[in-house]
Length: 98
Length: 334
Image (tube, rainbow over all chains, first blue to last red; front, side):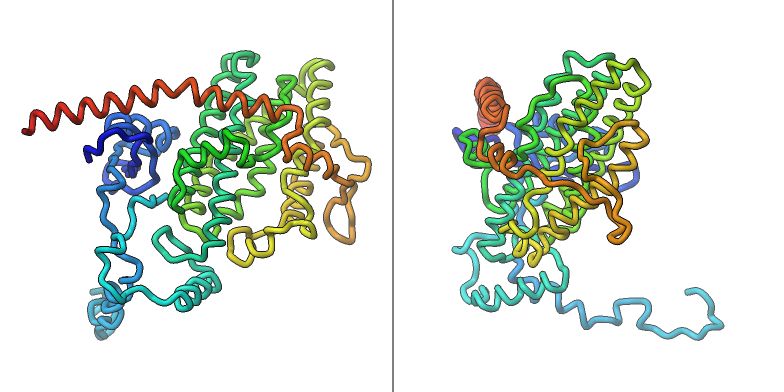
């Protein structure tokens, strides 16, 4: 993260917790010189109407994402494992809610 | 608004042979578009789709940024503290909308600096509506009511745009835009309860802005070179003429409640079409403004460029500070 002599402010991803009890959710990105400034700017850009009670900022370059070309290999195997869902199992009506 | 930095591993680290052939990629893209699916930044997309989006989203962002200027002109002269606070909030929103949109465009591989250079050098376009002057306080109300009203008509269908980051940015923008329109209309309602001079001021502002707002929807469908492909790709969902008609139909009753007339002798209800008919838009004037010869083109651009240059030392100082902090941390760690 210590690339010398940047010309542009680096990019940050912003995550906002909309209220206590809920998770932080990705809401956008912005440019800022450092983490403190990124937090400051995130407040102005993404929470002007009380959209949040807590903000995370993460350098965009620090995020590793899965490759879209691998989507099939990664996620398709789950498609035929229907026994992982409760609806796979037939339970007699008289048992009621289970 | 995912970013291009949050990208897939580069070609060197990617195992050979995973990439699909161009034809298969193209077919997969078309199939997803046909199924009304969404395209995300890491997905393969045709170069023309990417270019169209970069052009449209960056123009949209520039419009929000330049759009701060006509209204910003009235912040120091707002008629009350309440109106001043409202106007500051609105102008700040426009700046925020510009930032959401620049981020969305950056996910397509263009940089913020490239986009700003294109704006500042006059290469990139922005909405020509902002090249007209705001002559009285009533203009601020009319911009909220009509200009933002027209923008909302345009932007609501964009919330369903096929490109995910653009659609998500527009959802956010549309939520905030409604406040802009309502505050403008309400400010005009107040003026229409005032003196004859105030009422005349509102009517004069409506007269000056009405036709410009109709032109905001862009050239008639028959002369719209980008429209067909944009519709095919799910970037543009509703045509220019349809949106314009929707805007006219929605606005006429609002004008009646407000007590102003819209400056078009041909404007009348058409029972057969179940829509209002309206007169001819002056396209020669529209194109002259787009090409740079509107009343404020030069002034707007000059103001924008000056603001950017004047801010250079702030950007440099922030980077220098960040670098110093980083060096200090590195030293402590060593």
